[in-house]
Image 1 (cartoon, rainbow over the protein chains, first blue to last red):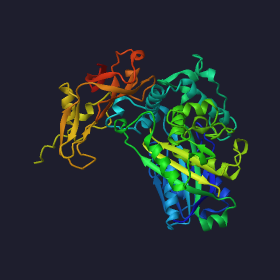
Image 2 (cartoon, rainbow over the protein chains, first blue to last red):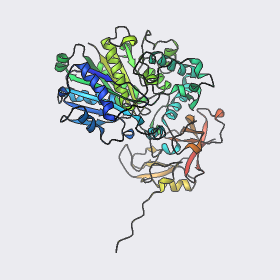
Image 3 (spheres, chains in turn red, blue):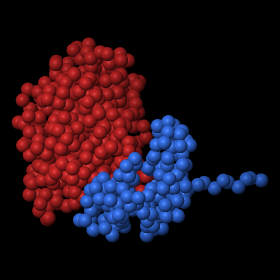
Image 4 (cartoon, rainbow over the protein chains, first blue to last red):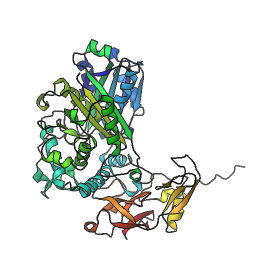
Length: 389
Length: 145
């Protein structure tokens, strides 16, 4: 198969409530990505639209978005894997280009979560689980990750202080990311002060400070084959590995709750395809919808041995200056988590890092970067490896 | 003369505080609950056990299954106590979701609300017991063995 590169990236500011329509939000990321790539919309052969449909009032949103962005009559379609929809979109676009079917494809990730009330949104989020057998018990996303946190604490002696340290790191970088929704500093003391909102339990043992916030936002990636990439782009970022896996929706089908098997399997596939290992990764973006999720990612990706995630954060190894910088754009915990846009936002961060264009968040001379993006509570595992060579 | 409409089998609407689907080919699960039994399914062709119950085997694709009862003790795999609830579950707060490991299958459900959460430990032996909710719906809960 031919080589495929990312030649343009874009992202809107992630905000609590976007004051415009879904198609107008899509325009923001797309315009930035097209401008970044130095092309026009006429050069786009096909588009892939990625979101979680339960938040959209619009049915079949790919059609209205393609129309608004001037992408007719090129083919467009819709893809969904919950919170990892736009990583899946990238894998599909990669396949479309590598197969020779298309030359240049746009991947548009979007979520306008404020289309519905937050109570409605919480209820719909819960329906990302098994609605026949689990949802009738009153499940919600934080509670599932909380069960993983409880199991990890029990098995490996991870502490609530370790989890708080992950949020503190996220906030360190969220403060310097002008696209993030949460830009204030967070201290460990906020988690132990009963009067501080951060310390309030959401679902034991996870506290408010352990959880990311909903947001409205969009991301856009433009991918191209080798010929077009070299024609349009001075710094193409090559897609080296796209690993994906799935797991049972119902927790009863899982062999563990102290980790996410689909993430481990996706990582193995991505490493094998790219011909690299964990030690070759210079910078990473991982799916930190909850603090525990980042800790699980350290272990799933092989940055730490099973149970060793806590030592990475204790030693500040995942800070910008550490041995494996992770989420130095503030992660989902700071940026917010507009479901369908999240993966594309993570990929954009790594593309900017590998180009040396990440500004204050720039890691020193990275060559290879990794993106870990999870749909649901480990239902969909997506690991993407990118390189600047 | 029009024939009387066949009654739709909506028994599953009785499962849980809020049920999100009323029809399923394993609706008999509800009849068993009403008789105080929590059941799983066993594939008679390849021998795999399923909880939650299934009408069709995901391994050999046979639909020749039989009901078996969840009995004895399971080990607590993990749990979490919710302080916020999705729409429709506020009246139940606080409640805890949990999973038990029975060896060749696992059961996802709720902890007995009368349990002191501070005494709950991963690995503890628990049993699965049918429970009637205040709104007349049925579910099952995990009690200390």
